[in-house]
Length: 121
Ligand code: HEC
Image 1 (tube, helix red, strand yellow):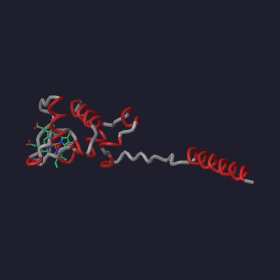
Image 2: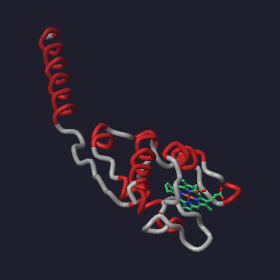
Image 3: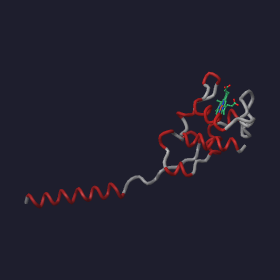
Image 4: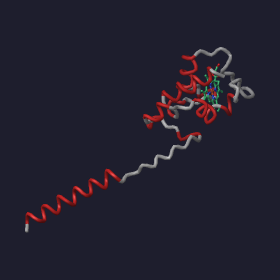
């Protein structure tokens, strides 16, 4: 009797494991919309296909304009800014002047991708 219940417990365990591994959440809702880009959730998929344009349009366009030339008093990003400067300013910002530090918003890969997009404007 004891042995049988042990076997039953083992079977139950095996079945549970099977369901737990097989079922699971497979629906990773990949919304390419704006601000759901977070720093620590960079999946392999994101690394493969980071869309610099989408990041720019979601985070930067309001101030720097679709053409990167800047809206109103916001500065142009296409007047000879160097790649390392764009990355550095985007990462660390200049909060006193109204430029967000994007290191808490975008991953390094995303900042790099948006920089490449800006350089191509
Ligand atoms: C709320 C408005 C705003 C948004 C949104 C914004 N910026 Fe800025 N950005 C500024 C302001 C203001 C400055 C000027 C800061 C200064 O005077 O040092 C600036 C400066 C910069 C500069 C330096 C340009 C230069 O020639 O001085 C870069 C590069 C830059 N931003 C990149 C970005 C990127 C990339 C994004 C999107 C991820 C972004 N910014 C989003 C307001 C914004």
